[in-house]
Image (cartoon, rainbow, N blue to C red; front, side, top):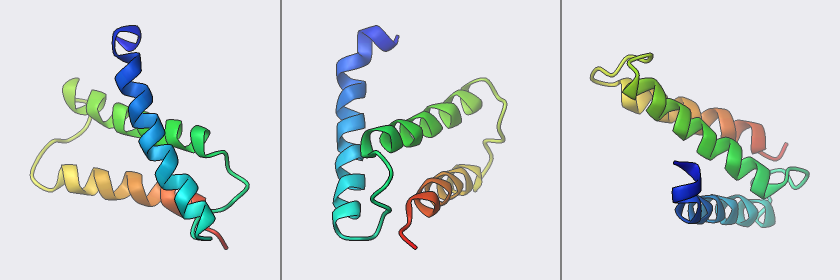
Length: 83
């Protein structure tokens, strides 16, 4: 799957990486974190959530998707926030 879709996956990494780099330039995110690596962490989190729902390892009821999204974004962004 990864090899077949690698060009599209790289586009996603690049888009997330740009968001992180822009936030670093604005002083919102820490400057000591590699934007490419952080983009892979974020993308990986999304991928794991999707797998969790597909394989019914995570609850998928009303509100679960929003809660998962908020937890993922908060976890990654809080770790990237500048002090």
